[in-house]
Length: 284
Image: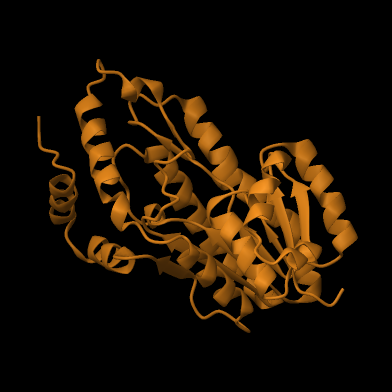
């Protein structure tokens, strides 16, 4: 097989879907994985050039299901090679730490963190034997900046960041690159259909109810300025076709680099005031 092979998890919508299309345009064989195979129609409908379907392979994959992972391993054996892995599958859990159950935290980590690890572990032997490959993990600006009302999501992305940093140091001697994509606010934002908000935080009886309303209002107000997700897809493809990567982290989107820089440079109390002012949150 002469075409380079890219595997994309969570390819049924958002960044995953757009990234799959961009790779197809570049002449890759794209293995588009998703939990619900009925959603493959979303991707097929977006293909303007139907001949690209010949380079598109759909594969059911639930990154939290051991049987699904075992079946996916059979697909990998048939391919025999993997050039690029895009770990995109994920969702966001919203709510406040006091009100979110441990089961909700565990579910968040099962997909966003442990699922990512499981898929990567399946791919690594192929890349190590090839002495080449790129692993691109979809993180978030939330992987470097905490945000009220999103502690499960933020914690899972911080975990992905730390794990990826260690992974890069382990696999670089084998010719494998690891990169973190850190999108800011885009039109596939975490408050859309991909978000699960804890029931308790939505009740008017919650002590955090007013804060939740302010956070949601702020995010909804800013939706018109959210970036086009194609920017993230194109960034992923551009990194993938480079001979080698010189950085680990790649913030994408308006204000992302500035926000991360300010958070890292400013004293914590000053940063805290900025966040509270932005969300119109004050002390009780």
